[in-house]
Length: 200
Image (tube, rainbow, N blue to C red):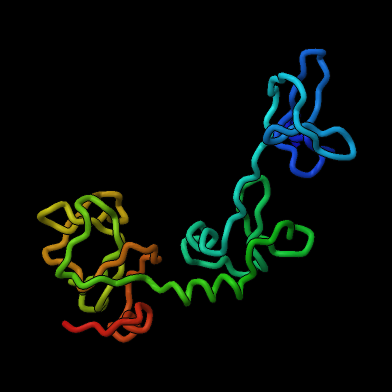
């Protein structure tokens, strides 16, 4: 807890600031009122605000967690929690503080927010990374899904060797939402994964 938060630890409900009056007296204040226990009264004198109550960070949602975890749940974990604004996977009750979601809630959110696979007739904004669904040039790997971007002329991707490569043809479909790259996927698996019918 910060020093500023400690100043408001025992403040009355509704207090948003601490004010100092001409005689040096400090009082909790809010919107033109001063706290004189046990009630708020109109501020009778000039005052100067010397501290403003810190506003809490908005609580993270399940959708925030899904984006943070890149739509993948870590095996063996029980929940995703938040501590001091940071998210973490928790695997037992001792570490489960401020639970944001359980595995069931996470998987339900992922299932309800399938990637929005677009018709490849429309190109995404130039230079913006998206997930592309491509037919592979290797016979043993029929299709693959990877991150890529359109530079206005070619579809490009960063290979495993960290060297930029380009595709000779556009993807069958693409999505702006995160999707783990998959190097070896059949057409039937891709259709099930993406929830779309893919035609060559």
